[in-house]
Length: 180
Ligand code: SF4
Image 1: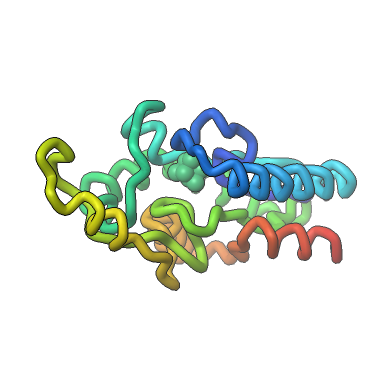
Image 2: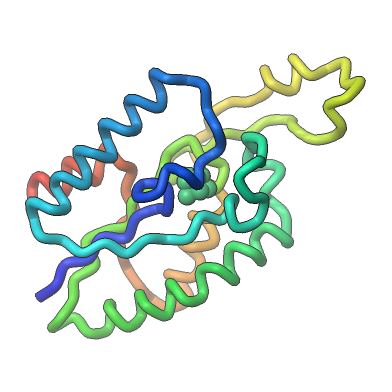
């Protein structure tokens, strides 16, 4: 029996992330990634990497966004397009239960795309040049108790195909793997 863990793209590839200057946040997330991967290798678990919806839409020079900007039909359509081959793989693993067990999907809390328990929302948008309310826009950002757009679309696709796989944050998945 092969056990498989599905992970958001940047858990394995930090190059896809928006450039950040918050070293405390970067170091904390990096420590969690290492702890998760340590457990994955210790328990001999396979990894399936989700695509990064933001990198594949806006590339490496994108600014940080918030959920309100991605909550539109075009970004959702992009999420569904890149999730199609993933869902097909999940169906194959999920239906062959005698050979495979999908132990979970790991999300990145806070992300407007890949957050699970929390996502960042606010009042972004418009031209930065000449914007007299830039500080107000930045201050409008807050974490809210909902999933990001990519995870919401993933949840809908899992429901459509009647695939039941728990989604967890990095911290929760580490605890889960330690108890496996
Ligand atoms: S969109 Fe998701 S996978 Fe891409 S960098 Fe953000 S959290 Fe990571």
